[in-house]
Image (cartoon, rainbow, N blue to C red; front, side, top):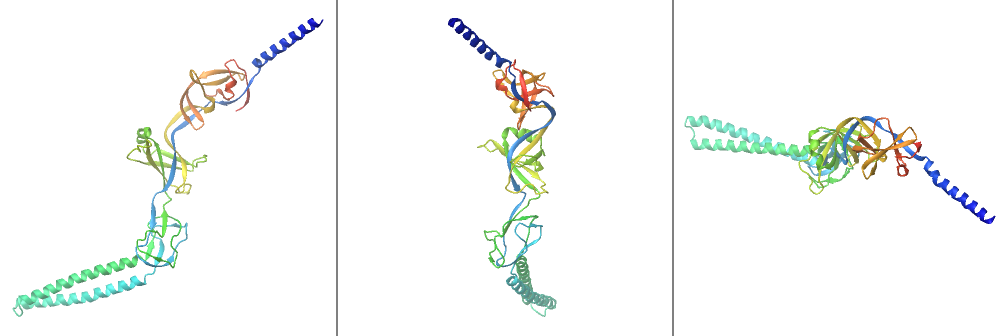
Length: 358
């Protein structure tokens, strides 16, 4: 009895083990899936760019003196020609008045010298005076004329120096931090600017791309360029490629480009880093699958295509290009087919699947 009991127990154990080994073969593998999409896809070159003002001006004084007035607030938008600073004009007004007085005095002396030269010209014709006396007055008139010309230049310079007391904006832009406040003394042509103005409408975005793209970009002059935040999302602004540098950086193998953005909504700010995408072409009716659906085996790249909702087929594919987290498939799948995006490691061509989600 004991031997038969032991034999029966061994037989039952072997049967149970055999059933456990066969059970996994019948189990469905849980997978996630996605549908092959067909749509027009823009072909883009991507890079990281830096926003730069179209123009940047460090405003400095051309005349020295006490700063009387600041006519704007830090961070204000200013128009070209708007008054920014006023320097005490009193010393320059005095210099201008002196230059104008000297001019008036020497103009009077010129008129007298010219009258004398004319009078002596009439007298020398009648031999009432010598030719030598006449030449002296002619020379005196010419000398007086030169003095008046020099006085006019001095008066014009004094007027110019007086105009420097009013410092106006050279462009439309946005002011930065104020470096010197009213009441301080400023120096002409000082190294420290009074304020820096950036032109923010429009702006440049500068970036670099690998040199192998030069030919394509030259063919696509004026290509559309999108700029988006480094966190991703929809583009902040759309601009146009306007500059291709005239040489390749030999240390990096890249070429510098610039795109111009109207920036009327101030979405881009000088100094900001953005993601840049240059649209070089548009691929019509492209077949798109998530990049995670594509696997690589000994014979190349492939995807698992779900058939009848329960079985899978291993399908070799050819990829044209990857964009973000998607792949453009040249051949191997059709629009509307379902491909496995997760769980491929447990699959074989004979596996059954259970779809958990997309």
